[in-house]
Length: 315
Image 1 (cartoon, helix red, strand yellow):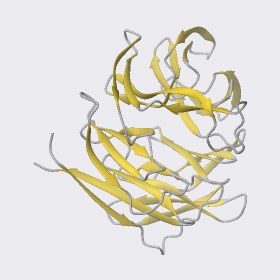
Image 2 (cartoon, helix red, strand yellow):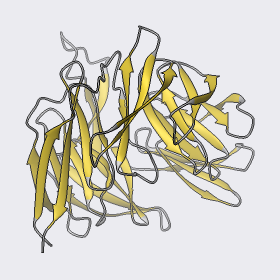
Image 3 (tube, helix red, strand yellow):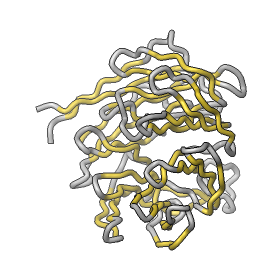
Image 4 (cartoon, helix red, strand yellow):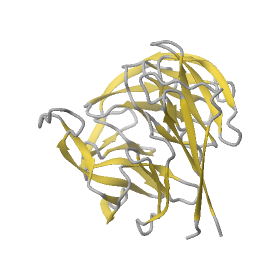
């Protein structure tokens, strides 16, 4: 495996990106162009949307959105931006908002279904999920606990929730057909044809004082595992340190992992599970981190600062 070289730098402070409720930073999935999205708080209810280009830090100033950005999805024609209080249709080039769709507040993730015909707006610990039609902007609620990934076919979608410990099969009208068991885990991402995830267990919440056993969260066990959705079996599992979440894969197919509390970026070889590159961030990560292309991440520090960590593979 070629050596990995990391470089870190701060975005020009003239590019304002003040966070409100957070995280206010998002990758542009699924293509991951060499840019990312941030929001700059305008008021308690609105923020300015901005696209930041990785190559030179140039910002494209967009329209106002309802709250802070949570996630984004580019379907090839439209950029869908999920904010605290609404889902927005956005022009990919100008960052202009063409439609604002009222949806339940505080959703955290866009999960496309049926090759993008629908967008599920996910939130952990929820049994029912709002689903938006990309054809007519209508919203309905589906029994779909904590969706994280989907696998589409002509017959419907299989929706994975390692947080819930199950996957669910839906037909083309989003009627649930079957439920299948999954191992418990956090931050699942596609790794080739497999799903990489961090095996986890329910534990008393560590950030609640005094400790209360009624409040439980999923915490990683210090391992990484891969799941084969074709054979429906876990493939392999190996110990892993300095990683409490996975962001995705880089240009060479290495898994991009983070330990936000320690401020560590880790690149993981999917064949062995070994960490082949590690970088300690120069600043304490504040409220958000996202991939900024295939070989970089961006993170917030302080109230309104953005830093980039980029890597390259040597010979």
